[in-house]
Length: 403
Length: 120
Image (cartoon, rainbow over all chains, first blue to last red; front, top):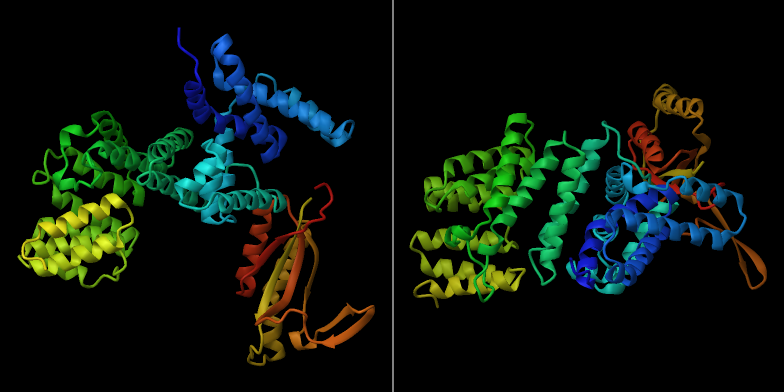
């Protein structure tokens, strides 16, 4: 028999709480009530499950228990006020909620959390808190913000949802393109927050889990599939990205045997489906670029002209300096460092460490070690994580005659 | 049903080319049409356009007496220039009306929920 300990229940909480909170918000129309009730249900689970064993459907058990707790609260709180009684009666008819179309509730909730009337910081924080089951302290740590600041941000966002009547529903077809954009951005931001800091694994898994859920709920949205594929393919290389002492390993130097083939296959299958659908968007193209890398047995064996063609396409859709930088790097592999360096000179990215890292690499290959060392130093000074800084400094040291 | 204030602001000392009566009538046409649309949808509660900020007067209580002074209370570069009060099912519906207003008058619109809406 499976041992039911706090760690297992914690894992179940991560996976199920978002669904339960979303369902309770639909039933009661109150975020705080829903959150408190789900917390309570888990506190009960922590007491009961280690003794009685796991219920057959833990998620359904949590939702039902939380719903009953919420009804108790409302009863005690208002005693006889008719309006509330109607809510209670309505809620009582929802027994067996666990069998209903609960997935739609999570979809509703993410569109509420990512409503454009909320700041992007608030969108991410609310999504992780309500759908991801993270505590406020965990969300604060993930975004390097003080706990009380994050708590205030979340309280303010929840207040705005209530006061301004931000709706709890999936937007109409016509609104969808505009409304989906912040949702995808929040998931991408969450994944990226998970690439730094010790709590990273959980955040990356959370981003992938939510992307998976949304992709299965909105199978017609090509960009949702594209984002999921991008996250899966990026994640497939995770184990190869760092040395034992935590320093960064470039794509060209990674041990490709360590790449996660299961994630690669899943990601590539999604990319192929996107190509067949032929409704390209920025996430799908980035996923396709990653799929090309995943196919290659080495950096030399990479189909760089394919990568370059995809970056050409991406640059048309999102003409940002960062995309132009990545395109220049691909061009460097096809036409050599000289052509690439000329492209970099036109980019306004002086504050971006990867711009200087790319310049340094081209300068090194052109046999200009002193210029390369200076560029590595500048990149290291601007780096955003210790792993990147350690890597860039080691590169600088490897450049001969650096002074 | 929730109520919202849709407000627009104008910058101080913004000098506009004087319009002929004919131009004025033409400029107002789409605004009137939009207001008619709001009314027939049951969204319109009240609306108004304000004179410039230097026509405003402030009264305030000070030491038990009420003092009257010139000018708007808030010293700012921009002042309230006009507003709609509408009823809408939720924020998205209010934002829908706000989008139509901003397209019509080519100025940004602030959307504020009322705190004392019945049924809140």
